[in-house]
Amino acid sequence: MIRMYSGRILDPWTLKPGDLTARDVGHHLSMLCRYAGAVRSFYSVAEHCIIVSRLVGLQMIGASTSESKGARRRALQAVLWAQIHDAGEAVFVDVPRDVKHAQGMERYRDGEREATRSFAVSLGLPPEPPPIVDKIDKELVATEKAQLLYRPELPDDGLLEEPIIRGLVLGCMPPAEAETAWLSRFQELLRAYRSEEPAL
Image 1 (cartoon, rainbow, N blue to C red):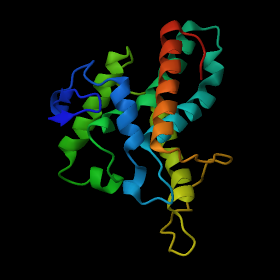
Image 2: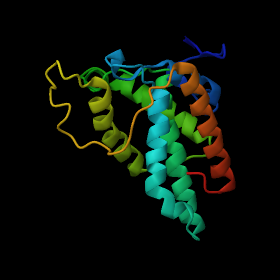
Image 3: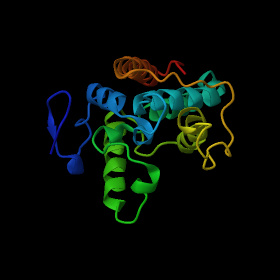
Image 4: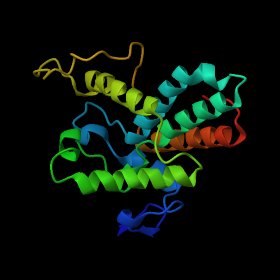
């Protein structure tokens, strides 16, 4: 059992839609540092999610202003899904990729995936994210590594070999700022999704 920031007690292995709240997700993700803390400045999972949602929004902006209701809805779904794509880490904390994908970690990965799905479904989203979310998520990693992990005095271990997103500067917001920013963006996107008004 896990005690959430709100005080609620949850069993992370049996989460149902509605168990995770935006308040808890925003707070927990803002307090989690990416890359197990091996970064030059604190960089939260919450900030990472905000950036992924903005990048997805930039790619979907044409669809969001389309006259097609279906195209608009798919665009809004994609951007909102990007904003919450790591929601499961509110209970299954962020761990380095090589650890998460190691043999024996299958149940942990499944638990995180199911927690994220339950939160998505509670918002009226499909249970699986659109492919563009995973694509942008992976593309952002190279930029994060170049800006946060690379140090010229150390071997780069291939950190600079992948293409980065030009012009993107990570803000490295402190937790309280990241929480406020995540919740504000989440609420804006959720309103837009429910009313089908562009807010990418």
